[in-house]
Image 1 (cartoon, rainbow, N blue to C red):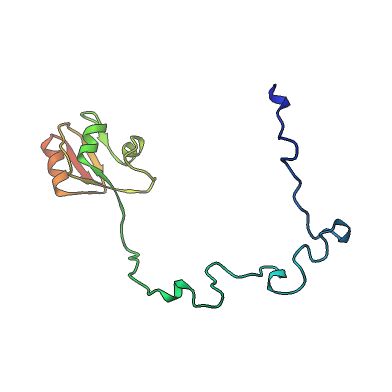
Image 2 (spheres, rainbow, N blue to C red):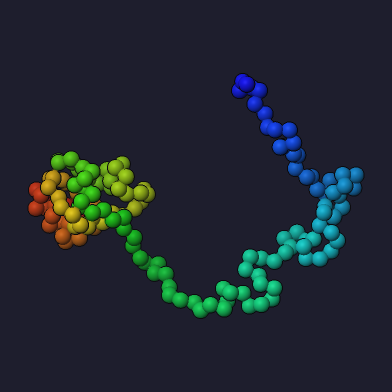
Amino acid sequence: MKLHELQPAAGAKRAPKRVGRGTGSGHGKTAGRGSKGQLSRSGGGKGPGFEGGQTPLYRQLPKRGFTNKYKVEYAVVNVSDLERVFEAGDEVDRDALREKGLVKGHDALVKVLGDGELTKSLTVRADKFSESAMSKIKAAGGSAEVV
């Protein structure tokens, strides 16, 4: 068998049913929708969540909580991750973290947390640091700069 001889099995591909193309086609006039009624209309039918006139579940349940539109989300990186991925003397910023796979997304804000140990001297630039992370970076001979 050659690449140009490949083809679907007989009967596997069928032409789509073309409705509303004249009475001679067998699917003309009402186009298989019957006559009159909600389901014959364009856009007819019941929406998702309709329960036959019974009050839908989404209206029976109470509303809870709220969304704080001022919340700031940070991509979290631990000191142990920096120890594992970077070499001594490296400059660590958002682009370097994304390149190494520690941060996803182009506009993610980065916060460095102090979980783990750091023995290498690194220059770390991030949007936020925990106090323990900042002290561990400085104790290892590196520097922590808030961008």
